[in-house]
Amino acid sequence: MDICFKPGVAAGCGLLGLLLAGSAAGNPGGPPAAPAPAVRTVVVDMGAYGKAPLGLDPVPIPKDNPQTPEKIALGRLLFFDPRLSVDGTVACAGCHNPALGWSNGLSLAFGVRGQTGTRSAPTVLNAAYSDTLFWDGRAPSLEAQAQGPITNPVEMGNTLPNLVKTLRGIPGYVTRFSAVFGPEGITVPHVLQAVAAYERTLLSGGSAFDRYRYGGDRAALTPAQVRGMALFKDKDGPNCAKCHRFDDFAADFTDFRFHNIGVGIDRPDPDLGREAVTHQPEDRGKFRTPTLRNVALTAPYMHDGRFATLGQVVDFYAAGGHPNPNLDPEIRGFTLTAAQKADLIAFLNALTGEPPDGTPPALP
Image (cartoon, rainbow, N blue to C red; front, side):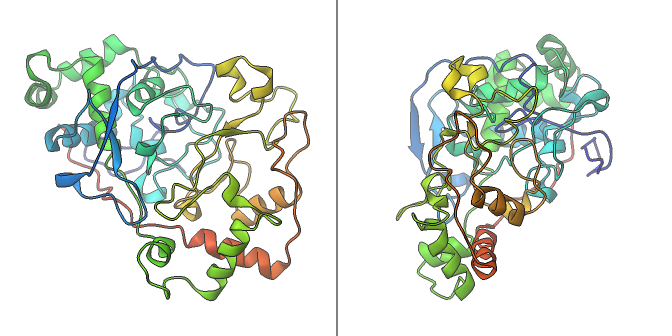
């Protein structure tokens, strides 16, 4: 599959792109995302930008980057524009393609000059709720995360001065940045703020599960899905909800924490995961718990994209993960009948929500 976004073209060229939980490729060898200053956030209703869908909390908005329609529209242009990359071939939307669950449908993310990353491209949907981004959690905000792929040599391969120079050479962007940010216009922080503002509108809720649990529609789930939900929560069985949590008010289907389940730890040169950030040996092989919302749309699975189906993922957990000194104590294995496994997967399919509009814009 060969996907990217170019001006006037919806899809069909180079790959990769920006965003989420692991600089799309998540290449830990590239430049780290710039640390963001600690800022207070205020939880607000999306208001004019649309209320958070059923099943989701109000979106937290940083006080130093308030949402405006003009800023969101500017961020949308940047998200789909391959000119953010050094050679104009890779856009954020390349690895976060609306047609592929806002992921890329591949085991690993790709970048400029046909390079391949070391991690899969997670979905960008509902990333607004996370304060640890990339698979290893090295970015504390969407603004901080957005810089990582742009300057990562395996991904977009650009430099920040060249990014600014390119955008300042596009009259349509000069006008739009001035309208949103005032006389300073196009700067690196403003680029990152605009992209982050757009991403905070990429929400997906209102799934069959949400209608059943939060909307009072008891017919929204099939009997198999209801049985699968019980298995999902069963502490003596799969106990998925221990890490992919949901409660009586809203469901993120993640605990926003880091766990070692043994994926890839048996390789001669394993991905260190969270340890590369904290430099603590006990964090070796730990990766951020991904949301399970829209999981049926975002195969392949795990940080290295090793599993093609949800059935394979269930089998891996049932076998107790891969033993290693840092294996999470909650990964202890379980037994399911074929019918129970089918019910559990049926429930996971009930987490597919209503997607945001992903129509590529006409670029300046």
